[in-house]
Image 1: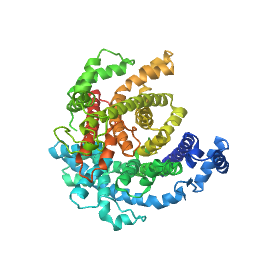
Image 2 (image 1 turned 60 degrees about the vertical axis):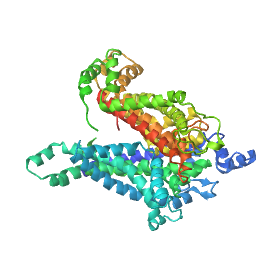
Image 3 (image 1 turned 45 degrees about the vertical axis):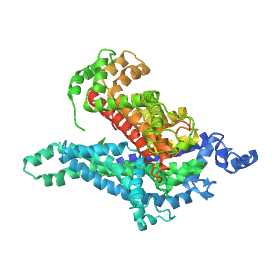
Length: 319
Length: 307
């Protein structure tokens, strides 16, 4: 049994490495798709032919494409993600500075949304097809169909501009701890991300709990006279929480996308805002660095989810 | 949502006939099928009604509700709703309700176009990968996995920055981001379809791989694809709104709902609610309508198309 788990993990690990390589290849290809060439893209439209030639010489852009890709991988392995000429900073230093701030933005809402979403989902499974079940599903539908940034503006309009309860922008301090020391300013960004995620989580949890409730062992427990609370605690929640493990891993790309929009709305200086600013001035090294980092985070999330799932549910390993 | 299975029961036998018959007979059940898909269940009926209303609003509306949408008017900037301008005016002095109609046109056109392109390309890609199996399947699907590893909005952002943002390129960019879902779905479906007797029989009779994929596999995965397409339209409208908010949507002067929202937020502190709420509501209603329609068709066809 242990060897089966190990073999499964090894296989998934190898797959993840392949996909990570794929992401580097994609970033590399995109860098070469830049109209006018990557040297022109990085140095800007006013660079002279001489400057471009010198830049290509210095950065091995005149070597063969294959050789360039190998060199690119070599740089990445040494932690060299490139240099942003627009910010006059290495890409890795931008990440070291901004990534913790983005984690402080998406971390608390994820935990909160999971807890609330799971509770709502289980509640709905107990109240199936009753008014409150339909109501929660309906609200979830609307939240799901809402552009994230629009929800943020509604909350800003209501709580900041009309009621004056909360500040309309997030703390802009360069330190990530500001998110917690100035938590009042983080309530709106956190609330927006939480609401958006709850819609997905509760929907998932509801169907998972309903699925579990229809299983034979639940009927057996009911036939033996077990009480509803006991069945919920011992059987339903335990089984239904397996998909939650997967959900955490799979929700990473959505959270990162959400982070870009929220950081722009609330002017929160994390990696999302850095990416947005990079997009505005066509700062390709930052954009491709974000692609790699977000890609790596997503792949790691999927891997961790699969491994956790394999431990929780032995049937997965046989597939 | 509630289960409305009246249409499902009616359709089941037809579905099985298709599965046994192999090549899909066209024409016989088409009318019935269309009726069930768009009007069978309660959800489908609500979705279809709203979509028809939105299409009329966007494309016929401007003919009935005539407004100036070409000459900016300095005297009419951000006027609140009045009897002359039912939803007020925006930062250029354009009538907001009129903008909403025009903005919906591009949202619907771009959303529909990219969803259809993505479904066609994704379905063929997935069917080929699933049918070939082995090494090619592995290679083709790793490409999909790689693109899925990059958060959607970031991928959109990258593509929009690298390619200039005209309407045709926006459609292609949204397609490049959206074909991954259908590719995965159809590939999964193909893995079971290719073991069916009629595919084996076709192979024995000497049918080429192209013929088997086009005549036997894709048509039988069509239900899944159609349902998924409606969800894709909704997703594309949302993605377009996000891109427009980030300033990478259709270039001005073309109005679109996401861009209107983004412009409107600048006037939020001035209390111009009419520039923020109607455009957002239009997006939400449209997205919900297409999701309802998808759920409705899914019920009618008994297909499973949500990943």
